[in-house]
Structures are given as structure tokens and as C-alpha cells.
Image (cartoon, rainbow, N blue to C red):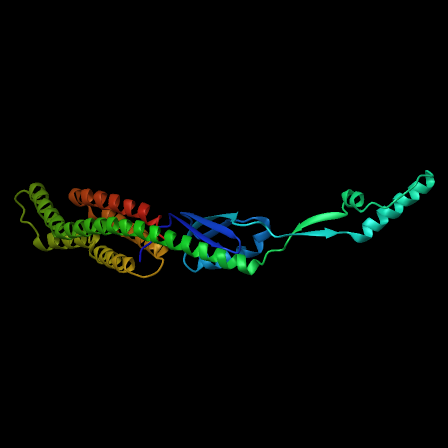
Length: 292
């Protein structure tokens, strides 16, 4: 199914004591580029996120934003540095001796001294965090892919419309081609007759000259190739894969053939049709740049 490279998706999941939100924003890019912003403690999960995104997105610049909200009290532990507390106590006792002062150990005072007591947050289970994050990511990807496909359907309709106009122009050119040769033959015969006056016209030489002209301005091969490219374009639109690059190549081929037709046709009417066809091809080129 045809997909645009632009889109947005959002997903949310609850678990492991958190509500995790993942937002995806995709824009045009020649290849797939993934930019993920995660809190530092979750950086090890970045590669897993990239793999999940790559499984569903072929092209585009995808920016990933995450938000983590605690749903309960964070689990924390109190750690007492017993050796440091004993060292403090011994130092205070020695100081009291030097000052000839009475000394009595005070546990509560020792607890207030630097680094004796510290509060640490319990280390999180990254596998549990990933399970919740992955669920939020998959929901965001689902929304992103749906939006890109909706835009792709709109682009497909527009491309088909423009391909039909090119096909119509090609048929008009094909119909006009024999008239170009006939017009040249009539014009050449008239000019020769005017120049030679009473001298009989050499029909064989005239026919040879017309044949040379017809061969020089023949665009049959170009029209055949143009029709082939149009058929390939339609067939590619129906492929169930990323087709942006293929369509970009076919657009270049369409443009190449119509340019050759314009340069060889030697006819004002065909020239006008060529200009209209080139205009449609340029619009197709612009649209194809948005496709995955």
C-alpha cells in the first residue's frame, strides 16, 4: 500500500510503576533516519526501539519523543556507611581527649555527618520497563503507519489522475504525428513547384526527401517507451512495499522520453502538448518525493 513519508503517531502504556508515552514525528528523508530522545538511564533500550521502528518504516526521518510518569512512590533504600561512622566516632573521641573534654558517642549526631547515611533509589528492571515502552511504541507506530497510508492514498489518487492526463497527451501526439509528415510533404511540393515553375516535378525525389524527413522526426519509439513507463508506473503504485525510489526513477524516464519527443517532433501542436505533459510530470515528481 502506498505510504507518505510524513505522519504522526502517539502511544501510551501503563506498567512497572510508570505511565510511558511515546510520540513519533516523521518527515521526508532519502533514507530511514531515526532520532530517539531517552532519559540517560534508559539509553540501553534505544537499539530495541530502532529495530521495532525499522520493521514498520522503510524511509523517512523519524523523531521519537518519550515521557515517563511515575504512578506510585519510587522504591528507595537507606544505606549506612558503618565503617565511616566508626571512623567519625573515633576521630571525635580523639579530639575530646586532646581537648580534655568528656566524650560520649551519640548515634543520632553521627548519622548527620557527611556521607554516613545515604538514600538510594532501587535499580529498575529494564526488561519490565522495555515491555511497557514497547507497547507504547507499537501503539504509536500503528497510528503513524495509518496516517502515512491515508496520505499515501490521497497521493495515489492524484498521481493516477496526472498519469491519465499524460496518457491522453501521448495519444494526441500519436494521432498528430502522421499529419506532421503529410504537412511537410504538401509544403515541400508547393515550394518545389513554385521554384521549378514549368519543369515537371520529380515524384521519386520528392518521396525520398519526405521519407528522410519522416525518419528524422519519427517519435514512434519514444511513444512506445513512454507508454511502457506509464504502465510500469501504474503497476508500481499497486505494489505492497515502499515504492518511492522506483517511482522517482520512472518519473525521470517519463521526462526523458517527452523531452526527446519535443525535440524531434518539429511541430507546433505537438510542442504545445509536450509542454502540458512536462508540467504534469513535474507535478508527479514533486508528489513522488513525499512517498516512502
